[in-house]
Image (cartoon, rainbow over all chains, first blue to last red; front, side, top):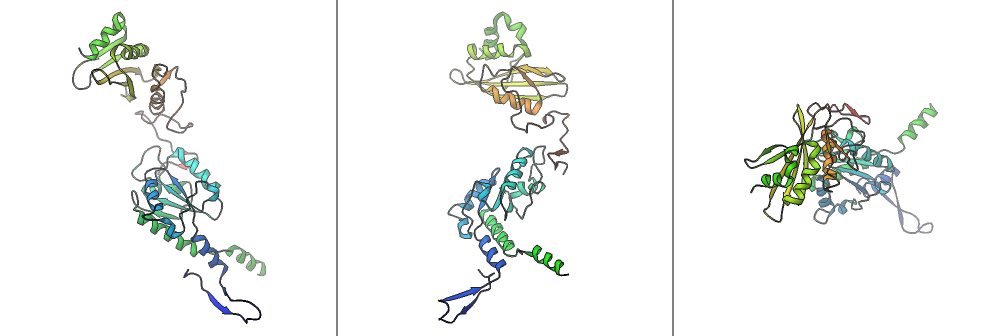
Length: 177
Length: 157
C-alpha cells in the first residue's frame, strides 16, 4: 500500500459526495497485480512438496494474495517451477509458459530448477533459464517455506517497480522530435 | 534342495540345451540360460519352482557383451530370490520377450531397451518408456555420448 501515494481531496459538497484520491496509474496497476499473484505450481519433483507447505495454513501464502493456485496456464500469473526439469519435460514447460497470458512471471524454486542442482547427467536441463525467462531464483534444496515467502515478497517488490507505457512515451517523444 | 537343483530337474532333458552356467554358491546364486530359451526357463521357474513374482529385469553392459538379469521372488513356500541371467552379443543384443508370460516384464523390458538398447523380440509395445521418444542413443551403454543439443537447448553446460 505504501507504494501508492494518495492525496485525499475534499470536494465542495454541492458537486460530489465524499472524497476521492489521485494516484499514478502505474502504481495502481502494479499494486493490484502484485497483491493478486495467482501461482501455477509447476511441481516437477520434491520442491513441489515444500510448495504445498507454503500454500497450507502454517505458512499460508494467502497472506500475500497468492493462495489461488491455478492448474490452468490461462488463469495463472506466476509459474513456480519447483523441481528437476528433464529435457523431456522442457518441451512441456515451454509450451505451458507460452500458453500463459501476459502479464506473467516465473519463479525458479530450488537448486534443481535454478541450476540443475546435483544432477549433472544426460537427461537434466542445467537450469530452467535455458528455456524460459526467470524473474526470481530461490536457493535451497528444497528451500524453506520462509525462503519461498521471501521470494514471493521480492517478486512483489519487483512488480511494484514495473514501468507501464514506457514504450508509448518513447514513441511519442520520437514522433515529436 | 536348492532352487537351482529343482530348476534343473524341472527342465528335464531340455536342461542341457537351456542352461549355460549354474552358480550355486554365495548369497546370490544364479543360472545363466541361453537367450533363445529364456521363455521356456522362466515358465519352468514359475510353474515348477514356485517363482510367483518377476520383480525386476535389469541389464548390464560389460563392454565385451551385454547381460539381461531377471529377478524372481518366491513368496508362499520357501521364500527367496531366484535369478536368471542371459548373455547377448553387443553388436546384436536380442532376447525373446517375457511380456506374454509375465505382465510385469512389459515395462521393465521397455526400460532395459530404453537405457541399454537391448531389444526384446515380440514385445507388444517396443518403444522408449523413460526418455523422450526422439532421444538418440542408450545412456547406460559404456560408449554412450550425451547429446550436445536437444530441441534447441544447449546440453554442453
